[in-house]
Image 1 (cartoon, rainbow, N blue to C red):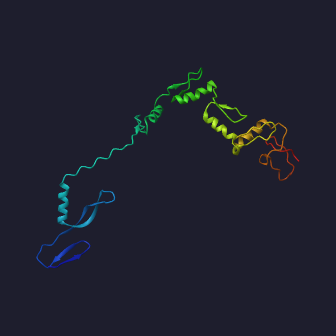
Image 2 (image 1 turned 60 degrees about the vertical axis):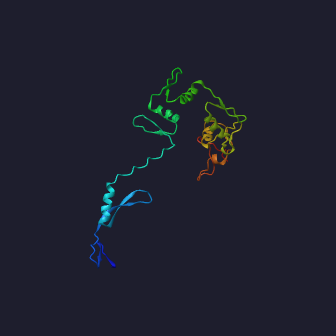
Length: 226
């Protein structure tokens, strides 16, 4: 016999022309596989009683053991100090970090000093203040300045770079600086009381609007009044 279905919002019950028993449908939350993640979610759907019974039987079956996560090749070193929990990619970095949790064990034994440091490298750098050692000499011709640390020498080398020149315009001086404000400080402290000379426009004092005759000022370094 032909089967006809009449669908409504709450019920989908087949009407048969035969005497076969009606199939019961119920609205039920049923698990649904999520293809994207491999997990499950719950959907409210119309299902037959047979489907509900099959799902209940399936729930009684023992769950298959979940696969163990694959071992990772990344090894992290965890700081065990209480309340820290920082991790590091190698043991050396962890040892260096652990110093911040302990006492400053590296003490400067120079007479009258006694400063303490977290690691030996900082103590060695500090000790150069007492010894006055300056092993890093500027190789630029005619300079010869020496420094106790290599990064200080690298900073100094910028003063010899053409694009960083800020040269003192006074005769027989020739001092040069990496920063313009340092040149201004130099001129103010060393040449203020000297005979004024022609200097670049950017260092000259602009004339007053009310008086076009420029007057020398003790706080500036410019050219002679016209």
